[in-house]
Image (cartoon, rainbow, N blue to C red):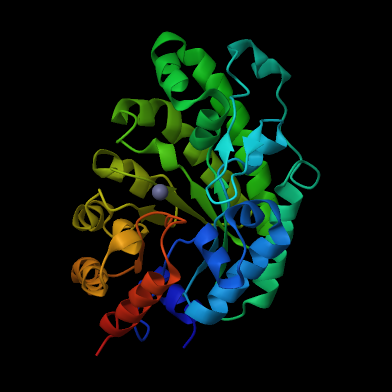
Length: 338
Ligand SMILES: [Zn+2]
């Protein structure tokens, strides 16, 4: 039985030999081939090698190609800094000056910035890894808008200049659609990150008015192109669970502050639910802490249909691979069906 079989079973709301699982790893995977964070984020051939090595050593049921959330805005001309041992940072926002909006264009994924290299990594990993589905991770429209304008500015804009926010969202929706199609053509599945759509950051009202319509548009556009979409939101999502379950995504990846139990109750089988093991235990947890988190999630998801056990969010680069292995061992043993 392979990752493909297990994930396919989850999407059909059936059971395989055990609950499928994967940790959401980015630069941490680089530890396996001895590359630093800067290399991981800037050299996509090595990025691909890191995920191939991760897949061969850890055997996750899904391989998620988590890069940074600035690939798209970087391709539009934003200045991104790549520290040697940390995640990339934006130096400034392209829409610091609101008036610049009309000068921005949708980047061509085959020509602009690091986008073509990311697509190359999608091709390389998906043609090498045969046992598990490979997912590309791109930014959703709201994430892109915050990368262009800054989350604080954007939240203020929703109150003072809502039309402007809609204009920004129209542009970012096109960016997301175009990159998503290219990722699909490169052979990878699609995971859309809406990390800052969390209710830890914005109100449910902002989500409904400024995020949801554009999310739906991206998802239905991709559906027409034959692609199904998983959406990840960080932090707390309990107040928007119904919206997330009904917007057309096939799966929702949810973070630890949100209630797994509630998500199952609200979604009623409409989406596959992915999550929501604490990322903290990967940073400094003991083997028991990790096992307890796996048990907590399996207690909710194992006997229900359409569950994939995963870390609630991307693991910190400061974690270590040993804890990831503990997670996989626990998940593999405790997730088995009798
Ligand atoms: Zn997250």
